[in-house]
Length: 422
Image: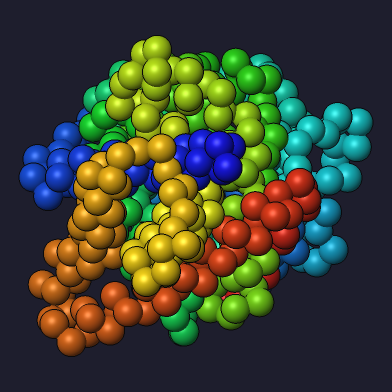
């Protein structure tokens, strides 16, 4: 039983660290007063890459939005990487004004990684080191995204204001769909943008979200030899790589990209399983670093990495922590012979952890969402959206659990998109 106590105690300790960390971040968010970059003269040059696989129905959306940027045309170029396309993606992208790289154009280019990182790395190496170094940042936009007209200008402002941070993420919004999954994802974006991204940006450890972000060519791309973040979640890997090497990730709240989110259960299950498996891979890469540095060099950034890699294991930890307390206080109290001590902590600490977990869960699930939604939607609509979000979280936790069981499967799932403007 000793190993059971050690494992359960470690997992419960990890989730308590996770909840305490994000509660401290939440307190900073409630206080407000974030560092927002002022306007600066346009001077940063951007290489915008749009990876696409059979996206003829939507590829015009980001290309048109980027063409209409309120930013000097000589300071950015837009490339669509039409990788393994069997439709008219390349032709439509070119017609709408983008430069195009196809799979056939670089058959001699060695491929690395999987999924989006494979396509982005291919596009960079097709252009070549000398070409990509003409730009300060490589910007990634998904093929179905709407892009705000001030997108590149605000990236420039933050690059100038904060001395060219290693990466910059903009506000990610979601197109309105239907069902509890879409509503839950939309609400999670709203909550995380304010209660996680903004306060963590001030600390230099905002999260990268797969689209709408810029990566420094000099400080990151050149250091890893391209876009070589070889997990199913290249964004999470890049973020933790940057922060673990002492870099900064900033977040911009006042410009945005709008992403098409899941509405159907089957579609969501495939995409979210891929993301959760990628998180498990990141956990394997960075777990040793996170644990050792939190013990030896404790800092907000190191705890950020620890909490980010523990995101996937929340479901397992919650099953253990709530399973323990349900067993201990219901079955253990009624039947003394069934009483089992799963933790090495004394009882008073266990009671404190139980109370703390309840308060923190209420804050994340209820208070934060109510704080943001009530002024917009009123009481009834806000409660309805929070209930949708809670159902979505239960669904997502089950996906996380399945991803843990099947984490070794390294298959990229291509999402299908429809012509759906925001």
